[in-house]
Amino acid sequence: MEQSFSLQGKVALVTGAGRGLGQGMTLGLAEAGADIIGVGYAPMPETQEKVEALGRRFFAIEADLSKEDAVATVVSKALTYVDKIDILVNNAGIIRRNEAENFSDEDWNDVIDVNLHAVFKMCREVGKHMLENGSGKIINIASMLSFQGGLRVPSYTASKHAVAGLTKSFANEWSGRGINVNAIAPGYMVTDNTAQLRANEERNAYITSRIPQGEWGTPEDLKGPIVFLSSDASRYVNGHILYVDGGWMSS
Image 1 (cartoon, rainbow, N blue to C red):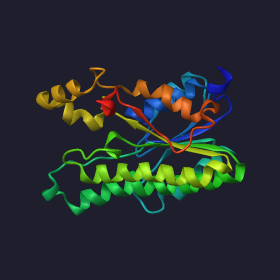
Image 2: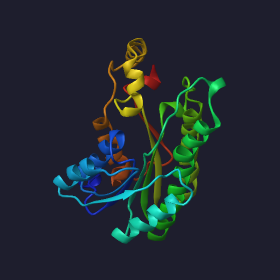
Image 3: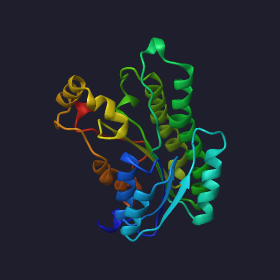
């Protein structure tokens, strides 16, 4: 069983690896034995230091995934560092908040470009490489808002609904060709993206009261799920969206 969860000898490409959930998942993958290609819009010295302290290799690529040619450049550069990408984690994402009637085209497009267009392109481009090798694991980061409407976040909600659909679509095409495509839907997590919510005492209290486990999650809570979906232990899991939410979706 220990071998089924091992990632020794594997290489994982993780977008948004510099902080928050991305850093937590990156460290989980490294703890399980994977070398890491970390993609971020800024330098990631803390993540790199922590990965290398575990005895794993870390290759940093800085990129703005909202740009038209960014994904192709990232994949091309990654393959100058390693011969094979075994695991892709599409974690990078942004959020914009405003009332629906005041939500701007700019905020809509910015979120869709990073949270949806870049995810599709990363799946497609890394997927081509995995198909050539006959194996691979792709894990997209969805959300509870892949299933619910949310408040004041129309572009984020639309993008995460789409990520859930993309995950199932790619799984349908590639599961018979050696590639597992799944997603993780985190619940309310302590990250920079939720700082505004946690700072609002009334909203924070309401959210916490709705979580059956009674507390917000942390990036460390994604380590186990990401290792499971990246390892041989999930060989027969495809097109699945795994809630990691303290029970929110069941309440």
